[in-house]
Image 1 (cartoon, rainbow, N blue to C red):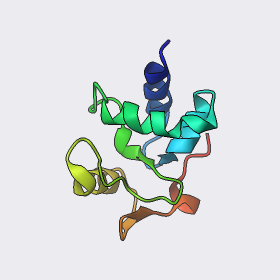
Image 2: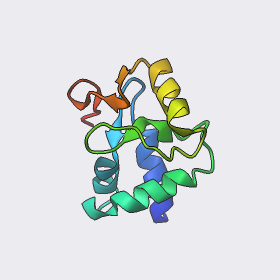
Image 3: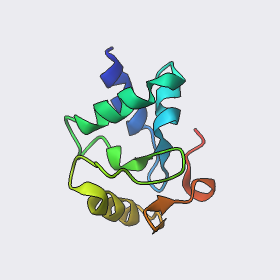
Length: 100
């Protein structure tokens, strides 16, 4: 399995109504220093309808300025539709971070 496939598999495990951080996904893939690789893979997401890349935020809960599938407003809207509150471009990790 390629690194990108591992990343997509990990992202698909994020439950509805939860988010994960880039570093968290990187750690799930075997190396906490792969956070940038996670971002790159998500930017190239081959199937955004099935791989919920919008559910990945930075370590401070901030949405990504370069969300590949419609920008920050689209990521915000997808999170809100998933039941996640977004305030000033940020998600409360204490409340919404997946601890899986």
